[in-house]
Length: 214
Image 1 (spheres, helix red, strand yellow):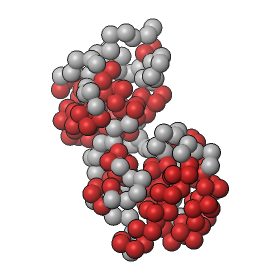
Image 2 (cartoon, helix red, strand yellow; image 1 turned 90 degrees about the vertical axis):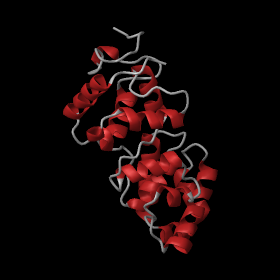
Image 3 (tube, one colour; image 1 turned 180 degrees about the vertical axis):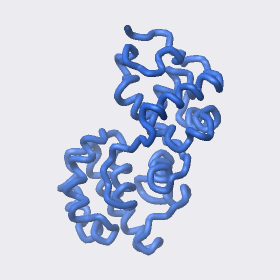
Image 4 (cartoon, one colour; image 1 turned 30 degrees about the vertical axis):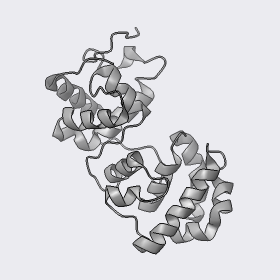
């Protein structure tokens, strides 16, 4: 775990992220709010690329809770069986769809608590949805953000909850909306787990990581 960077350095880091990608976007494909929730829930322990391949066909035939219920659990499985834990995930998608129809008139709720009441939707998934769809500065900490936060000194912490609070506390307000995507994309493509690409990193000179690669 690297030492905590100061405010000035963190501001410069996110100024560079912003200059490089003013409007970063998530990579999970979706056609509406419901399909975003499903896609994010399916992405647990799976890659965005793998989820996108599976959901293109699924969302073509079921892009509402009602249509998903009509498809049924076995129908969902037929589309997502290339994704890890697909049986349990299919069960959650159907249970989620049933609750949305029965309790929320088929509409996805906009509060974190209500989102987390849905099967397969944890805090991370809820935060992604709040950020991507509702434009709220919610910080979803995945493996990439956890690694980058600790390695760089932007948001160090020994567990996900601590890193989430550190992201909220340490990153200037002007960058909060897109901080989640900047950090995920940087962790996914530059600050790799086994061999970070320090030679091409735009924040190399600001990062607190001591074992930089040439």
